[in-house]
Length: 300
Ligand code: ATP
Image 1 (tube, rainbow, N blue to C red):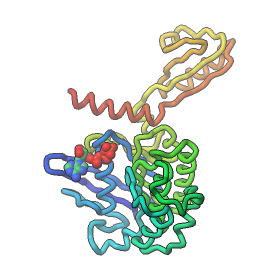
Image 2: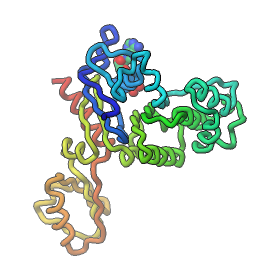
Image 3: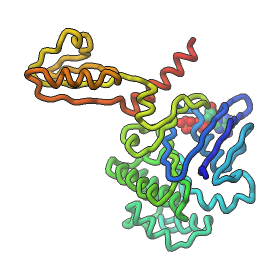
Image 4: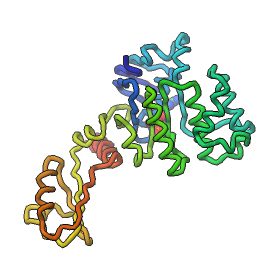
């Protein structure tokens, strides 16, 4: 059974059409990256899955149930949610905050200390939240989302405020959760670093899906050139001269995906070649491409 199924979902807020016919199926154990410009509809999608709002049209099913129904109480126990710009009662300590949420969720308080340990807040569990840095609050938010061993985790901008090492730790932790069968939806504007941890990316624009798939699928759809960086005292054959974009000690040239192997073979055989680096389009390049295509369509 799929974990999440959205079929032809529309969400209107008066005249604003936040989602316009969204179809989305998420399989167990999948890590889905949800990307899009401000106002694209990411948070609206998350709120629909959490059952916080109702769809104007279409159907939403989470673990096979309608998440807005009051009978879906058990379903909510399976969900973990970290909202954007998380805030807590500042006068409580980290441990008190987590114990409070554990009670709300019907989970044993024993988990609180263990989770605070896992997010690296051991040293601050008895300190009031008002003394926490931004990154510490974010870690506390993550611990809160992990209470009750959720089967579906929804994370809105989870790495905001985390330092680079904490960000890496965070993504590794997602992988561990995935291995334990947890399904994860991750919204982020911070694209570098996320690509190797997601199974599938969904790029949204104005309530539509602009593109979806794993990184290879997105690269094939966008068909953006890749960049070869060549160093050494080499003379490129005439048919490749026109591809040179930059020459500053190194040669940078753009090559289409379909001709990659052929060009590589030619370059590898050149006398004087010292090194060759291959740069594939990043998630950021793909995001820029697909959102840029949407703007071009709109201007037509
Ligand atoms: P961001 O990256 O800025 O968080 P987002 O992709 O999460 O954006 P949403 O919050 O889903 O975007 O908003 C989608 C659209 O719906 C926007 O045009 C927003 O103004 C509108 N919207 C969201 N909530 C409401 C609301 N309660 N009332 C009216 N309009 C709303």
